[in-house]
Length: 147
Ligand code: HEM
Image (cartoon, rainbow, N blue to C red; front, side):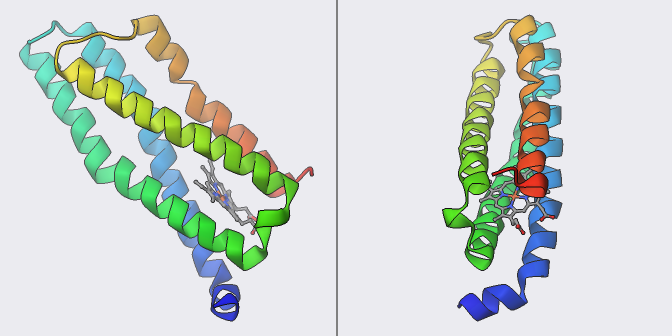
């Protein structure tokens, strides 16, 4: 198994980065769509349109991407023996938090689709920055491997 993972290392890494890009693109778009849904009146056609867009984004981009990023990332970790390395522990913590953010925002989008407004527009705009911050920290950890 270890030998198989080592020979396919570059393919795993290419796949990992491709789905990281899709996942991050989806996470950048979702809060933006939620800002527009927030601005539409509860029960209106416009709200229904934004609700269907957030659901399509989840089904087509976000859910398949997060699954593939995790599967390929954990396979990569086995291939490079990352489980004992400090940078990987820090990265794991960040990606677990980012996955929690993903789940929280998806659940909030579903509530908004039912006419609820659990977050203010200002909070949504603030939360919009989370994926960008996570990307900066994670990329520094995997490239620089400072510890
Ligand atoms: C979700 C769980 C994730 C796991 C388990 C994981 C794990 C890994 C591992 C073990 C590597 C190999 C590092 C090496 O070759 O030395 C890697 C590479 C990489 N990861 Fe992740 N990762 C995850 C998510 C992410 C996310 C969210 C991002 C960006 C926001 C990301 C960006 C990258 C990049 C850019 C590389 C390539 C680094 C290089 O060129 O060596 N990963 N990942």
